[in-house]
Length: 304
Image 1 (cartoon, one colour):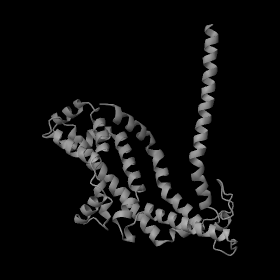
Image 2 (cartoon, one colour):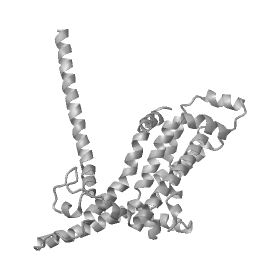
Image 3 (cartoon, one colour):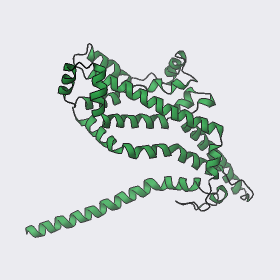
């Protein structure tokens, strides 16, 4: 009887494993196919792409689409602005958030509850777009690079994650450092930060992705083309490509044909190349931070 029961469990486990693997493979295909499709289109001749049928590999390989993208001065400027924004915004955001989290771990901090409440209120109350625009204008942030950095310097949620993680570090380490004559800055940089690498890497990844993917700030608060970010340029490319494709569809419905002498670089191909360039940095960075990401989220969220 026991043997039959074990056999049933074993068969059920095998069935579950097969189902689990099949489901994971299906999800991989669902998630990877759109990206591989755009990668294939970006590496394919534009005129050939117009005939359709491109799946996950280029039918007529070419690098002309990427040459066209990188030959655009506005694209290169937007790429530089986005890279600077990610670097400066991530570093300053991590430094300020970590310093605040460390300070709020001190139960003897004067007015500690008041500061926590003061920092918590903006997470529930938002002034809205118009008051925000007026505030940025009075702060001289409109049409300025620092509009990308200053408003995102502090995140209460990220601060809570870091503070909760720092609370898991034994207080005896800090007490020993104090006895040796270390000040608060030395304790933070030499004890807490090395031990908090997982949560620091996690928050850094969140900030970097948020800065890299943001295009609304450029849309709302930046008119100068020299300060537009890469994601906003991608947004414009997508909109222009949709308009051109719509015009092409209307032309074909009226009996038009594809011009064989048309340029090999088409809006659809440029859109795909821009999309790949815009997403590739995050895809490259994430695998190196994945081990810290999972560990930092788990420890920072559930330990107290």
